[in-house]
Structure formats: structure tokens, C-alpha cells
Length: 284
Image (tube, rainbow, N blue to C red):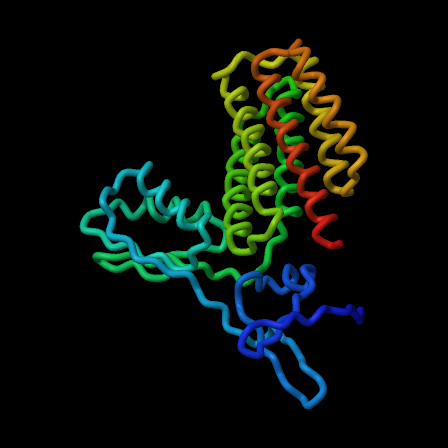
């Protein structure tokens, strides 16, 4: 058990306040919530447990039923942190709704009536955004490996992309639920990584100029370096990689697709560095 001293600040009307350790706030995910304070004579106990978490609910009267509208709506509400979504409708292709919900971690259709569908989060697991970002990195490396193989396994690449999209949405939902001073940087980091995943998928489908072997190997090497540095929280390695990528972008001796990937990776590295700096100073 670690003891810390906290300054007591006098407020108006005879009230007093103290600040709470930021690590404790993050661990218990109560940035803007409530705590229980138990008064035992000379001892005050601050306890985050036993407080029922309020589920975020919304009811939507559907204005359209096409796939793009439904995916944008349902995925958007999921990323915003809603736990229960009621969709009221007149005529709708429920197969589309089931397909969309199945692509979202932890969400299930719990009520499928004639004029409404209720979607609910049934997962109680807490996901760490850093760990999810590392999963996205792993799949990007697997996608690059598949592109380097002679038979170019496009089916595998599509699966990796779909899983990365699911993980991206889960990350953005998680950041919405547990917002702190690093959330903006992590949000941008996740989007940058998912852009790389999307570009590799497009390349595998032949809808971009095909990356030559050398460009692929360079992208793979830099992605591996990022994965190793981010996984080990090595600030110096990330800083060195940041400089290398910046120089690579400035010289611009790559194909357009390789340039897009390297530029997105550079953005991810920059956000990772910003996150580490913010975390360091928030503990001071």
C-alpha cells in the first residue's frame, strides 16, 4: 500500500476538498463519476466499489433502412459508448441489422419484435486500449507478410482487415467510456493504424498500384519497429523511428501506396510519443 500526502483546499461555505491520485482514478474508471465515502471517526475511506454503473441508453426512430445508413448509425452509437440501443421501425431488413451487430464486440440483439429491435452490450470485460492497438499492429504485420507471399492470400488479408475494423470500433468505444487526457492522442493513433490496414486491403484487391517487393519490405520493417517499440513502451526507439520516417517522407522516393502507409505510420508514432509524454507528466 502506497501512502501519499494531499493538500486540503478550503472552499466557500465551510467546505474542504482534496485531489485524488490520477492513477487511482484511471484504474477505477471514475473520471466524472461518484465514490462512496465512509466515515469511521478519524478515518475516511474512499471506495469506488459497489456503485452501480449507469448504462447509456438511446431510442431511435429509424428514418431509413438501407445498409449504409444502418451501419453508420449503429456503429456510431456503439463507438459513442451506448449500452442499450432501441431501434423503432416500420419495414427493415433485419438480416442487415444482425450482420452489423455481429461485427461489434460485446453487442447482441436481445429483443427482436415486429416494430422494434433492442441491441445490448452483454460484455462486462474491461479492454485496455494499448493492448488492442498492439493487436491491430500484429494483424498489419500479418497482412504485410501475406502480401509478400507469392500466392498473395487476399482472403486472409480481408479477415485481418475485418478484425482490425472491429478492434478499431472497440477502441473508440473504450476511449469514449474511459476518457482521460491521453484519449485524443490514442484516438488518432488507432485511426492511423486502421488506415494502414485499409490501404493494405485495397492493395491486395488490385485497386491501387501494386507495391514492389522493396517497398513492402521497407513498410514491414518499419511496422515491426513500431510494434516492438510500442509494445515495450520504449520512448527512445519511438523517437528514433519518428526521425527516420520523417526523413523518408521528406525524400519521398516511394510509390504512392508506400508513401500513404509510411505517412500513416509516422502519424501513429507521433501520437504514441505524445501519449507517453502526457502519461509521464500527469504522474508528476
